Length: 149
Image (cartoon, rainbow, N blue to C red):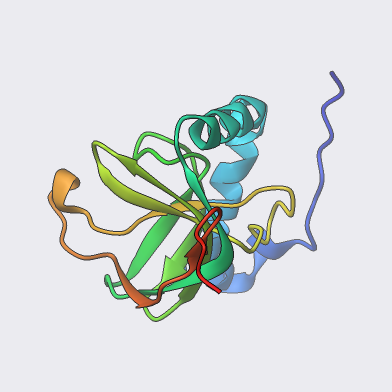
């Protein structure tokens, strides 16, 4: 297909590397390298929902407790591409969850800023990968099909 090269406001050329000071620009730069793979990650995302991800009709709210941040990934797996980051203290509203061998994953209801068509998955507890709690549940949501009124 066609390759579009877009320059976003010269963000990477700030004097003294100021643009990469908080790490966000580094994530955006690596996203450019991942663009060719994203379609397959979308398919993985849809497959996850088919394979037992539970949708929330009222979002569950999670707070990032891990320091300094958690990763929001293209699919519910630690091997999936990183789409974005959630710094400590960030509120994540989840519209779906999936339990895997790595633990419980939650899907952010809000799209990833650099790509409005995509929503990231975050791992709630990192026990399977040698980490502790990553997200704390602040408010449970209501799952699709639950008869809670």
